[in-house]
Length: 298
View (cartoon, rainbow, N blue to C red):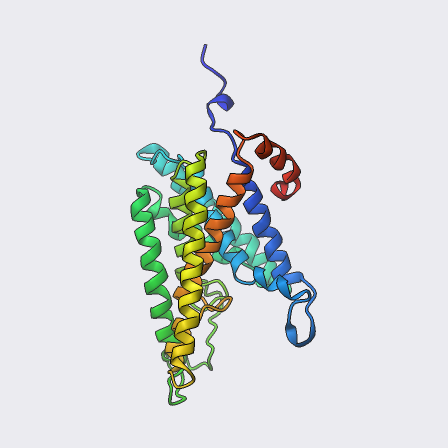
């Protein structure tokens, strides 16, 4: 007799659910936390959620796409078609929900429309191997911010940006329902997080070695990105052009290459740590998974 279908499914990864919960709670902190004088967070350390929680949210979206389309086994043929259709259906549902929330004038930046576009953009990449997903993520992280900034940054002489001149709008240009370039979560930049998440999802996430690599690589990327950004800004001073300053900045929601790399690093670190401390092969892992169950349930 064949085993029941549910026994053929791989075990659920508690650490990934905890990371998802932290991403959602981070979005609450970033958008709904009490602000102090001058728009600063109160307490000030809440600033840690700005930008990073939305990046973790997007990276986990890519990871989820990989988990639901075969994990380490690349889908092909009919399974690949099903995975692509499922992603497109998710994109459609999220787009409807996002548009509804925007129409209701929800007093936060709604990520769901951008999330929907990201699912649609990820569809062609579902059949790629892990190394090509990483290459794609790096290419997007470098090329997209550079091209977008070149189009949307005013000149050093004070002239409007290329996009402002083309659309007859004032800078910063925000095109209606544009989730690719001028929206608060530009999908052409956030695609880097999704592709990197898909690469992580194609890894063996049950191995402690994988968890350790994620923590080490993530910490290294974060230090490299934000350290390089700080050094570049200090060396450039105030005489640099607006485009150059945008390119080297790593502030929250700047969507620059340094910020994308830094956010990717912190996201990988969070995912690696969540998997490491909740691994079922260790006694403390099972205990911590139980303690963190409310976060995972979020």
